[in-house]
Length: 462
Image (tube, rainbow, N blue to C red):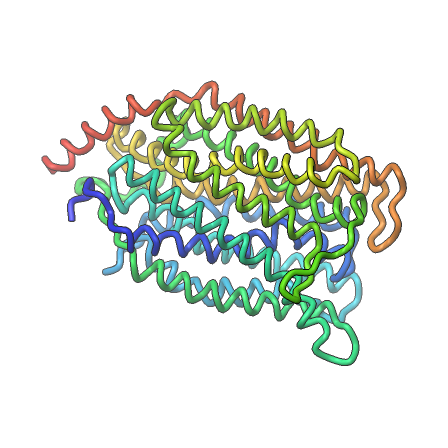
């Protein structure tokens, strides 16, 4: 198959399976890990926030290192697909250990949390940097790339919905397996279920996809040149900044929502088909479903006004709507859910564009320098995702501590006011910064069409 021909549906679905698997875990990290650490594992919110930040010192180097390793991998399966096969079981196993509570002293438990969380982020990198990079080498066709990114995000949000819907029933079931309620066991066994599903889906992504675009035949391995080219790639820096701010926005809203509903809204559980769900679950599932609507809208809107403008306007609107969230009271559940739909749709528009734009930047780098470093460029996607979540998580922990949050207790009015800020104005700042970054992004759709035409000629001549 020619690299510019359209991909078949099976391959797009196979690619989507990878983010279904990742998102089950990622949403558990971004939404539930903080409250697991504070309310189940038993460490303070401030300690968790600091841990999230400090572990990034290693992880900052870990992402580009994985990109470099993947770029220099040579197997019969390609550069990036093998890591989906090799990393699936370690990914699932360490995920279970991260949500496991040892019966140790407070200090020893904190050390355990640091180690397992760091290993989890390394496992996530080992799978997801190659997975993200795979999009850049499956096809050079711009529509295919946007569709792949859309499939990826639809499956990602479907994986998130799957995780959110099952988390309450599974944790409740496993917590009450014995005579005495044991939420620590409930969480670890729930993650075991998710881990088994994720490992199987990573295998299907490996088996159903194919790499087609290789670096120029004359390209020699030169790490110094790759980093020098990246340092001079202004669109990459702009997109990295926009992605980081977007993910802080999402992480802050998701992480704070569990506390917001538990301690500010304080609504009773709902029952459906014999299963009990908290309003938090309804809110989060509704958000993921609305994300999917945004993903579906991304391509037709981007075709009319371009990827850059679509990204920018969606983030401006998300910032405005998020600010409105502050003015809603605990009794206005309908308006809270409506705003969640609108904000989440705006956020959903961003993500397929983001992945497609990383692929554009890889092409732009090859066009302007003659060298292709897909893995290194796409490693920034994993870096931005984890750093955005980490900064959002750290801000969540520190803000909770600042406003006087106490786990499993009635909160003061000051603490409740802090929860309102954490789902409104604070994440809105992240969305606004993301939109401002995109003002300076210059790789328009028309320009990239010329770039891909030129690259196609070069590859045909080599």
